[in-house]
Image (cartoon, rainbow, N blue to C red; front, top):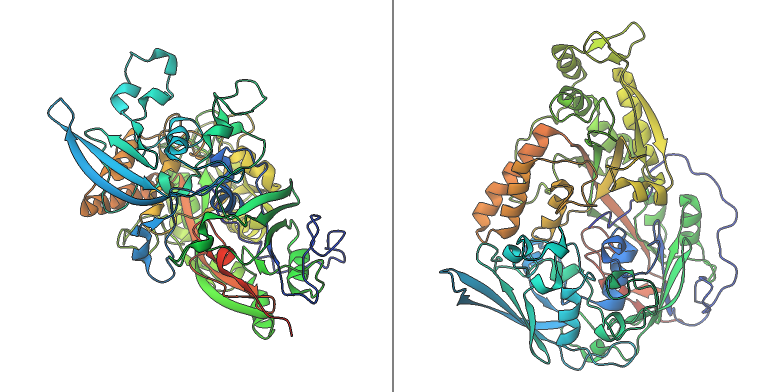
Length: 612
């Protein structure tokens, strides 16, 4: 999902900050930590990003790990993420949540083809936070409205109807009537996939995994939304947060904290599957830290009104040795989910005039790729806890391309590329564009505060090579508000982005970044990469039921991106995870750390350490 994880800035300098605690302490709702002589009851999680709001725009909520965890802990999806840990194959496992079973079948479609039918059996006895019963009506409503979006190939859609002139009022959008999902029992729903859009039976459609189901009685026609066009866009619901999950929202202060309280009537309190029991933590606090040293001071503190139990984004490598010697703290090094990239805005009007033309500016993008010392980034910024990356596909995956071009750090080759393309280097040491009206190449690279060190080193590499590049450090909110709109005035020219493709098959979503920016890639494609051949591969990857065919498609997609270079893949770091073990035990750690968009299990499973 977009920016599901935010690594802390790995700057080498630590600036001392004297005050870091919120006013108040104890178990109140002011954002302070619980504790004292009693066993811990509030789990305090330090984060570097929070959702801007709790409106049920699930796409925006998924921009952050806390937003994704909010969807899992408050609303819940039809099924859950498997505990991957060291077994990447577990990602294909079905983990029952609101759906407890499924079955695939086929029926004639009346035209000589076959409809593929997915039947989901829903969990009985589930109550919404307001006491109303969860039924198939809620699932059908969630699927048929904009609560779950964007529509993708793994949604139950009759695409023939969508593209038909019989529905002109739908424009380019999908009408609820076009979604082939129906209630076949109080606790059963059925999805129909038309010929040509059948789904792999090896694993369930991914959108059913990461989108929360919402209550029809709140979001639907009988709901009490008060804003204009209510029921046309229930995703904008900003009222009471009513889900089925193990927690409720106690208090949310934008740009400060999100505080959850346990739902003691949670359906999972009697669950024996090893996944969904009633959590021990009575409250969960996500506390925002914009300044990393204040966060570390809170993590190291023993003040019950200020301490943090876990750092969602891990710790800088300079802290590892100190924390390993601290008996209160457990430190583990894990493979991270995130891959860091340098992206270019290829929009013909709003991108950088030196980078945006797919073919004409390709030599410059190739030269940039060759002029960045990836290994230097790994060593200097990440302290060796990283390796160079060349794709969104993890190198341990069988779908990773073994030999992609444009990944070697070579300044001489970078210069040769530009010289061969008739770029010239002036007496001032900077590169100039080809042609009689040659101009000095100038652009800026934007990045949020969490990428300050990486930004500085990359800009220095490119300046040393002879490109007049400006550092554009932005606050996180502004950066991410602009990032996914490369077609608008004031769009970014080039930018650093880290995102979490995750293990296969969950990683299929990442290719939406390169899909048609006015269709499937709308508000997902930050580089305005618009290549019809890639769109064909994108859909083919979504729709294939043959895993060998899928591998061939992914290899071709990786190769195409490596040749066109809308993105320079930089690093995949290891995450140095750290948690306090003097207050909470039974932490669950896996790819990406203790709390990520694929790992809600530490929050669900930690237990308080007994107090003597």
